[in-house]
Image (cartoon, rainbow, N blue to C red):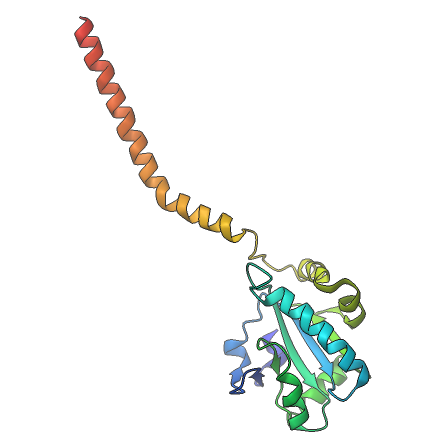
Length: 203
């Protein structure tokens, strides 16, 4: 997926508006990527944006999930001004990324994915293949449940196969297993010696 943004810079959605070099820092090799084409002034986008925000937060915020889902989002704006884009992003999750307002690559993405109107959410595999051409209706109707379908379609390696408490228990067992095995050997040796002594006493 990094090849889609090769040579491009994305902006992190924080107060500092940090920029990241996609090939080095985006790490999309095992993630489903959402491209959200929207415009803050569009009435349909204003209705959909809170739905998308809630969808994203419920999958990536550790208040709701044990581990953040393998999901990334890049906002591709049609906003009229940079101020309008920034004002919108300030209301959205900090994990979102965006293209700089002046970056003409936004128009290239619109052409590549045949975006004629907004809102539009294109769902991509890590290799750039399209899973869903427009997931707006699916997200609105199913909410976070639809991510499982995308995850399977993208053939992601599931990092969440263990719950946190299961993982902690597994770590504790992995640390204490050698000690338990050693204790078992010592106990068996003690039992053998006791049996020997008992046999000698009987003689």
